[in-house]
Amino acid sequence: MKNKSGVKRMNTLIKLELQRLNALYNQKFLSCKSPSNMWKLLKEITGGKQMLNDISVDVNMLNESFICIPANVMIPNSNSVNNDCFSCFNTNDVLKCLQSLKPTQSLGPDGVPAVILKECADILCSPLTDIFNESFSKSIIPESWKNIKIVPVPKSTSGPNVKFRPISITSPFLKVMERLILLNLDPSLKPFNDPNQFAYKHSRSTLDAAVVLHHSIVSSLDKGAKYVRCAFLDYTSAFDSVPRSLLLSKLAATQAESWTNKWLHSYFSERKQYTVYNGKSSTTSLTLAGVPQGAVLSPFLFSFFLHDLPHFDVATFVKYADDLSVSMPVNSQSDCSKLNSFLSEISQWSSSNGLKLNPSKCQVVNFTFRRKCDLQQLVSSHGPTLIDDTEVENTSYVKYLGLSFSTDLSWSSHILLVTRKMFRLTFYIRKFRQSGINQSLLSQFVNSCILPILLYCSPLVFPGLLKKDFASLRRALKAVSRASGLSLNQLVNTIVDRHIMSCKKLANTILSDPKHPLYTHLSPCISSGRTRSSYRRLYARTTKYKNSTIPYLAQLLCDEKSVRYDTINLLRHSNK
Image 1 (cartoon, rainbow, N blue to C red):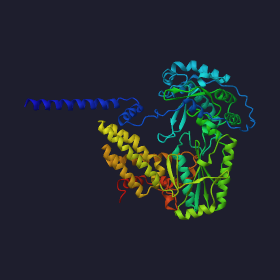
Image 2: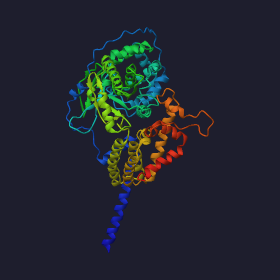
Image 3: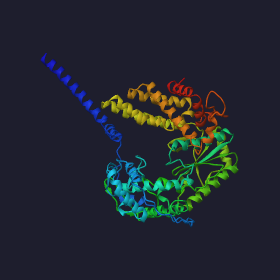
Image 4: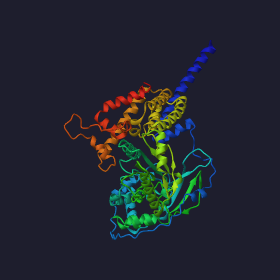
């Protein structure tokens, strides 16, 4: 009897200790001040893949591979005669830029933590204002601030030949100066703002770019085009290949103040870089071309550099940084010839501007509402797509901006990729439950890591989903529900709420900006007469156009309750 009571007492003590340890374990996550620290702890639990530190890499060779030799380009003479004087920045400007620094930013080549500048901004802003103004007025930048530390990030974690993307880490002092330069450059270069460039802009995203491309295709087909041919162009190391002298020449031809050009000349001159990988550092090398990926100014300067890329009225041009697409409705062989001549002009512009277009990596997709056999006959009769006499590969689908575009304009292939990712992530949920993580953290993981995969570009994808696509999503959601303990209804309601919110945000972005490429397409839904609703539905000739983003947004604005009900029904009862 004594042994039995002793065993019971021991079991009770063990259970109490396990409860205490579980509570401490959960508290460890809940006490994490930053989400990144919490995700690091979660990664330790799941045994997630680490960076490819076990791969043997010669850092000196890697560093040299990141340096591009500038192309020989003609530099046009600048007609700008702007002898303006430098106007000093004040301490408030510097203070705002110091406070905008990210405290978690990696150490730059000068070893100064950004968090110190951010936390001591009130004290440092006055002396730094004097130093920065002196640098701007004399166009001199300290050499230690111009050095670049390259951290290579693997583009993929599988395969024998791992390719790396160079991420530049610079001095936090230089980052502050770049932000100050942007305050001066942005107003001067607004006339050169390209409405077809969607990257690095306020109220623009990959969603806007993808919707513009998709709408141009489905609206052309709805109007009777036989098919739409779309070329997806690929540049080799676009950011790293920009000829700096040509970039400065383009800036000099604008209304930008001359002192900014002089300072940028110093900014690009004598810039050295070294690569750090797996604890090893390479020797320093002089950079001769390009705008550093990761620098504050680089996105702005790269977008400006592409502003004079040729545009064509009969074709739709969509740019997201260096991801370019050119689409055009095709009804005859002459239309294909026009597209080929457009692509040749783009290739010639690229060569004369020091950028290398790679025809072997470019892709062409022919979009249509017709049957596959009819499309093949049309495409073969109209001839191939050529760039500088090189035939571009025809494919049935392409991955663009994180989406899978299919030739029949369905989203089935995209949903297949999405559901595969969701099923893979249920493994992590089971791991978390085994380790004793509480329900609130599991819910946070599902909402932060799984649902965004499903909801990415949902205003574009959801309207065109077939019943079988909703059935696939429902199966994946049921797997997530079983693994996490969250009810299916709860997941569906969260998804629909976030989807509707994303749609309303997109509609508001379009209708509040007359310069948005989709404004003229969505604005007709605004009712001009005395009606019950402020909005009206848009006419669609074909079902696929009706089930595309712009008509869907108009329908949502007219009757949100009905759209919400239909989406919930399809996700909950997609098999009916």
